[in-house]
Length: 216
Ligand code: ADP
Ligand code: AMP
Image 1 (spheres, rainbow, N blue to C red):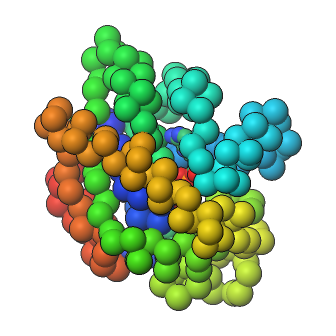
Image 2 (cartoon, rainbow, N blue to C red; image 1 turned 180 degrees about the vertical axis):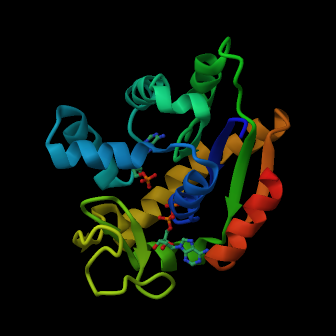
Image 3 (tube, helix red, strand yellow; image 1 turned 135 degrees about the horizontal axis):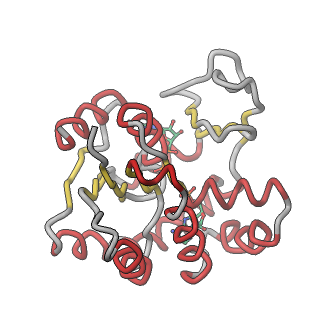
């Protein structure tokens, strides 16, 4: 199968992580989530994790230079030669420019930017009932995608927890950050002819079907 390089764009709670996991499985490409990388680093207690936490807890974006360095290193790993699905990166125009530069000369640009669209009220409903596996990062929802056993991850048995930044007041701050800093990327990628709008306010299987239609 030829390689495919994807970006998932959309507000927090749009379903990027959920769909990226599925895409990763179906297309055999790594799922790269900058948020997951920060949370893994925090779990290890690394300096990067502690630095990122300050911003994450306030619902703010981590500074561009920190995020860009991480993605640069991750994309240099050999599994990315098959392609990749980026989830939660880029989130600013500076990050998008940096990504373009990283890929320039590799002969492998971005193929599609999937813009997952959901209304604000749906986002709040999704995030306040999201549960995340502390061990493997798998994503659940108390109503829309509940685990088989309460509080336990179906795939690894790990403990499910509520992310600190999924409290309602932090969710509002994250949505403001999204509108101010990330939304401009819609026009940016539309201008490059890469933007594909995906209706995200539907059940998970329907959203996946829409994505598969675009990817062919
Ligand atoms: P993002 O990565 O964009 O922040 P997630 O994939 O973590 O979003 O999804 C946010 C929450 O919404 C999770 O609890 C997830 O289980 C749930 N969710 C994801 N997609 C859907 C969907 N299509 N319908 C209902 N709930 C969904
Ligand atoms: P996510 O797991 O994608 O919801 O990201 C959680 C948090 O990590 C965000 O609210 C930011 O604080 C931080 N973060 C993740 N990705 C980025 C990024 N590309 N740029 C800046 N901050 C990020």
